[in-house]
Length: 285
Length: 152
Image 1: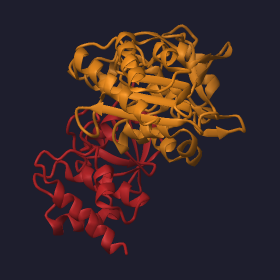
Image 2: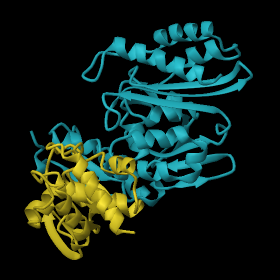
Image 3: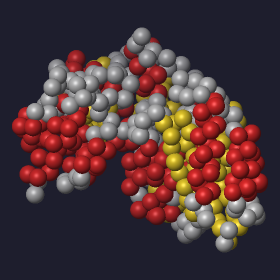
């Protein structure tokens, strides 16, 4: 059932202050960036918002800036721009891979990384990469801006530490990961153009056969994109052996909370997650 | 909300239409501008039948509210600049029922803009968002390879 067009308002914000002013005026305006998720809901007659402000043409929300210590991606940067950026390709390959996994070229030209985060689907592909890269989010409102570690941002299914008057403005990535071993694998119904059943990302530092540091982020296995702190704790400082891998499989099976839904089953997601963890760990040796 | 004026340059011609701001670019092209070469397939950004170029980038026009792209340059299958790709599609028999063909040609254009001489794998990836229910993919890939050869 199509949405009834005259019920909806859409205004185009010319700049950041005018967008923030609308979002903060108490009239329930909601932001739209590339529209690749909201328009699907709209076309199906299921978009719950009636007043939309387009933030797609705001200059401050677009582009990638580089400093010696960090890379900052403005939230309105598209998947296409991210996957072709030479510095991101060199230092943050898991993020570029995730951007390439997300939808088709046409959707990658419209869809934005900020939308992928704030849409808050646990099946999104860039969040697991952002989790292992220790991303920090910068939120802005008419009252000011604040920063929050990304692993604290999602608090439950589609629930976030973000007020209705706030916009996600920037994603900060510390440039401290390029020397790590990095792994990502997505399992979906098809090789491409499929929403993930499990999306696994990991980075690690080895000293011989000892894991000195490890980070694991997984999508589609919990109400939120999950940073697996329990698995990381069980592996850090340990010598990587088949016994340790078996133990890690048990820990991850306890830490994730997959569900049965239209795309897969809880049991399958758990088994695939354990197998991907094994593959990641075996490749560290 | 009341209707709002929107100006678009489509295939080099400027148009101003007065429409609801959330009207899809797809519907403005087909209903207000009578450019019916752009097709609707799934209406949810999965099939690519409604592909057009928006300021030089491939997009699904079913996912674009028209007010959001006020002032933009649009290229559709009616554009004369796509004649070489259309010719190759005709020569290789790449069109069957024809519903996916406009989107396939636009996606091929985007691919060839970035990669003038794509490998078969790059062609598959470039057209990955465009679904052909007649499943005539091999001849579509052949058509893109033919354009690539002629780009030499």
